[in-house]
Length: 193
Image (cartoon, rainbow, N blue to C red; front, side):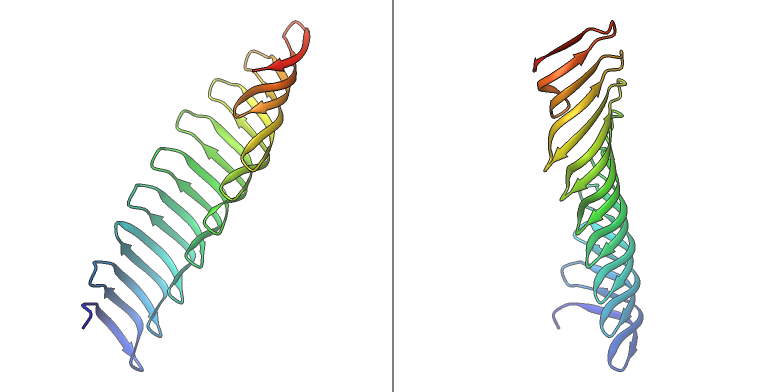
């Protein structure tokens, strides 16, 4: 009488087996049920978000694919409705992250590739670069860096032309105290901006 509708297998007065549950607000689940809960394989549509995969006691658990209304897409492992384990997240802006996830955020080792060809391979914590990592830029430059809570600290920046900088880093370039080694062997230390 709330407008929700179930069509499917009943057993012991509960949804058990394959069925379709449609909510009055338009959300829909098609798949397996156990004791009135989504359990097993199934697909849900909820306000433009589509999930196809495994369920356990009404939550996304196991392997699945989540396509969001904004165009983002995650393919991988879930735990208690969150991306958790190994997976790939493609953002609507073209960025793609492949690696570990912890409770819905990039965590552990992972690779973030940008549409322009830049690529970061390294450690993540709480959706931020954290720990050791390497960024390879589309122009051939390479940055090896230590990152703490999303802030780059010290690293080595090797230019495509062979120059090499070691020292403080700000975002994607030398910034602060460092040493630059030029192609002719000349070494200069100083403050870089």
